Amino acid sequence: MQLQPVLLAVQSALSAQGQLAGGDVAVEAAIDHLVQGLGPVLRQAAFDLAEQAAVEVRSQLPDRQVDVVLLDGDPALRITDAPVTDADPAAGEDLDARITLRVTPTLKTMIEDAAEAAGASINGWVLDALSKRARKGTDERGFRSTTTFDL
Image (cartoon, rainbow, N blue to C red; front, top):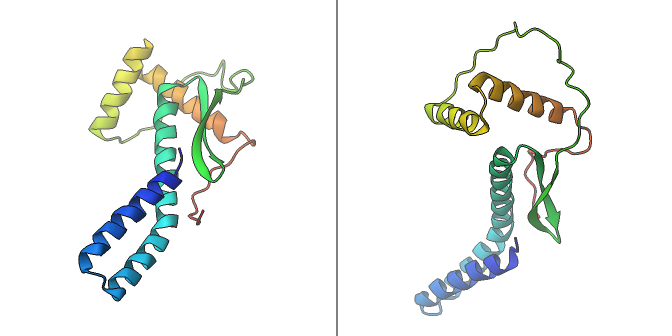
């Protein structure tokens, strides 16, 4: 996604609103400061939206790896084949361990629908999803940043 056209559109819209002040120098200066301050905020918002899009795409493409990468300073989604993993380390174990999860009704419905669409039981679908996520967490090839920074 290219951010520069969006930044220019916001700048243009703010400048147009500033013209309503009739050439007031203080208003024009305030708008200039606002435009300069919004650049990094809009870039971070675009990155956050790209992360949300990646999560959504990941949920719909379980056999793919979806990452947010920066291309020329702009966030982009990179979709690749999921890494091939060795045999499931838990294969052959009995299913006698339990975890109780509290989820929202909306998430429960989403899980039920996803399991039905995959032709799996809810328990099987959740086990598969958790297993994939747990294995992905041990993958040393990437990282996830939860720190904010200016682009």
